Image (tube, rainbow, N blue to C red):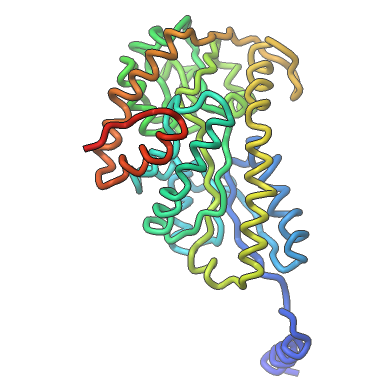
Length: 348
């Protein structure tokens, strides 16, 4: 039997049985492979939960952008071109393609997980529009990394001590915030930070506390300030719109519900405790549930630090973003994220 006849026979059997020949396999690219979000939530969802909740109708071939050797900023560009079906990475990596997207992750807009989740949910309609128009993609979910805190290989005791220092920022808006404080925002890739801190290329660097713990930043740092100067680095899960439109209604429903309940929700539920545990592991102030506690000096932000940070945010950082974003993005942000966080952004 030649191949054509064989395939025709298989197709006829499948049609007569009213079933597909095989499940729909999605090509999925996840966020950083070595960090907790991927290991604890992304990988189990795509490899175990999705096939189960879809009754075997959906499966996934999973890798991550770092395993593929592609930059985080290329993930959604490649997704838009259909190179793979689903992409997950930090939204801040994509802001060079959309200034408006910076509004999803504003420094210091939320100092706890509950407020951060409200801000993300309020921003969701804006994010949906951006991904549809810029990346030909549909957003399935947005999950947090822990808040982006400050690691320093230099002595600091307050926010004022960041003045004059070279600091690795975690996004364009964070870089603007650092500049307003009198620091210099430096663009350094996540994987290059330990070497940059060790060589003095940067004095401090911003990332999630857990990310810094897992990546060994405590080996090249001395001080930790757990003030979320870099926001919460939300990770967006999006599917190529053409692929989405090709799925059945049942597959769409299973995928949307699955990401929301099996990936997004549990990541948010553990975000606040994760921060407390991460700080304990990095400083030794409290019990570390992950392994050995380290000895970074904990620098708690004072009320004066927090007041100054918020003043800089409102007077300089947000107006700068509004001007660069243009259009009605500032008004949309004020009516959504601004309302749930109590931050008023003056718009013309």
